[in-house]
Image (cartoon, rainbow, N blue to C red; front, side, top):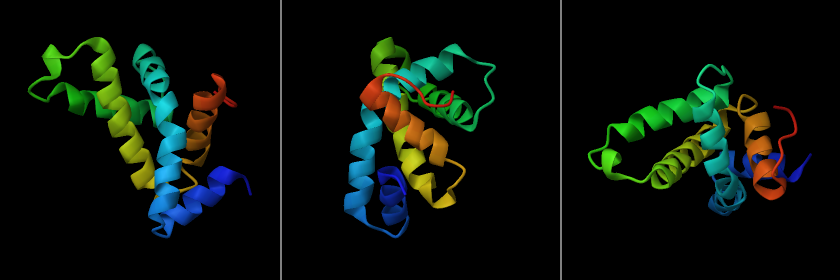
Length: 113
């Protein structure tokens, strides 16, 4: 079992410290993931669809048109992180994407996509 599996399992069981650590590992790489997903509108991965859905929701907020592009990406990244952590209970659907996101955050490359 890798460390992400352990954190996700503990998070599923309601361990808030595990959820916080998972967020800490995931969040730094999400702006790049968001930018990549928004730049590939026809990609059909679950993570890309999630990013585009979060971006569509964020674009309807009253201040969305006043945000700098970087700030908008950060807002979408926050939403995606929240959704990924909420959906850890549906694993294994998100496991590869969650792990790849954390890997990207720490290394700058993806393992599988």
